[in-house]
Amino acid sequence: MPGQTDHANLFDDARSRLEAVFEALDVAADARERLMQPNLSLQVSVPVRMDDGSLKVFPGWRVQYNDTLGPAKGGIRFHPDVTQEEVTTLSFWMAVKCAVVDLPYGGGKGGVQVDPKSLSRLELERLARSYVRAIADVMGPDRDIPAPDVNTNATIMGWMADEFDHLARAKVPAAITGKPPALGGSLGRVAATGRGALHVLDLWAAREERRPEDIRVAIQGFGNAAYHFARLAHARGYRIVAVSDSKGAIYSEEGLDPDPIMAQKRRNQRLHDMVYCDDSVCIAEHVEKLERDDLLTLEVDVLTLAALENQIHDDNVDLVRARALLEIANGPVTSAADARLEKRGVPVLPDVLANTGGVIVSYYEWVQNRTGERWAEEEVNARLAERIERQSRLVLERAERESVSYRQAAYRQGIERIVDGILKRGNCQDSD
Image (cartoon, rainbow, N blue to C red; front, side):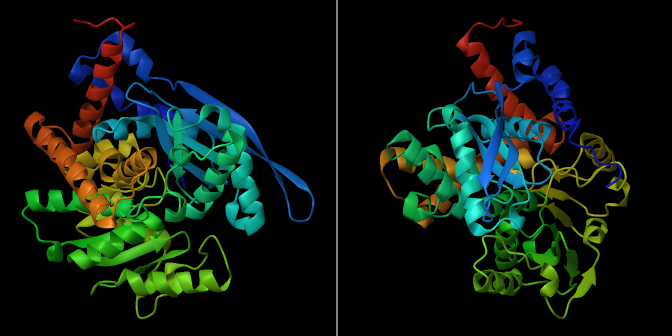
């Protein structure tokens, strides 16, 4: 799409947000330098034996950003457009968001440049296992803990966890999170990102003295995080008027019920024994069909961005008519577009706060795996609510107190914690 920040400068765009944070916090020069580059960036070849006997080799990456606060943590995505620049940027955001919600983690991210939907189920499993073999030397429960991301899910994490167990000659459930519950996965993990985003939206709405039933929401994306957000928001009383996916968008002024839409998609997925769901939200009946990107310009109270990065950029930001934005995807608004929205007075509930539900419950899965405990889903959900609401209040209050955007407040909260850890570790000159 013209005007988007491409992967070639995605990392530079992401890091550009740091300068104002560094100045506001008076961050020492040594600490600034440590935060400008990842600790480790690994490129690997991922060979896969195809069903027809041929061999294909896909490029893959694993990046570990600053690990001052703990081992690297972050997802793995399978996508044809994955690049090293993208994975590096995503690992940077992971480092910030883990610190924002006070988790003992650094940032990590992985990816394979592949169209996973073109693979058979067996080819996909071979891909997952081959990727783990390629990065096994730099991962583990005390070094780097992968999780699901775009086009990866509990099934794929289960294959990866099994492969790592074989390589380690031991059971190491804490090495990977987002696994099926039968393999040590946490109850509540699947819906965690969407549930966490709803907690953030609820807090914002309460501060604005707005009732859920008076808030019209459009959602870009209908993957796992977006669906669970939509389902829970609908149950909470928010009016979901539009949703979209890669194939199109649907709109209903009266409001949409996400469950029947997803039920039809999943029915077809089960019939064909697919890992992925190929049907579109456009299968819904008695709704208005829109072009995919038309959803971004609807006049709604909250535009929820739950697809990929750089969806709001220089070329379309002035067409956005939503009164507020909620970021469930990573980096869906470029820094330039973000500045224009701030100038217009359009608040953005940022990704480094709003989409932390997934990594918070991944942390709880890691804790359960390390202690041998299994928590009830109600306990997991209660712990998620307590942590994300407590940290969100700190961000919202800081934004008001320091007269800055929610994004700036969140970055200040996260970077402040990382910098404090850097200085406490030594080998770094403090400007004081």
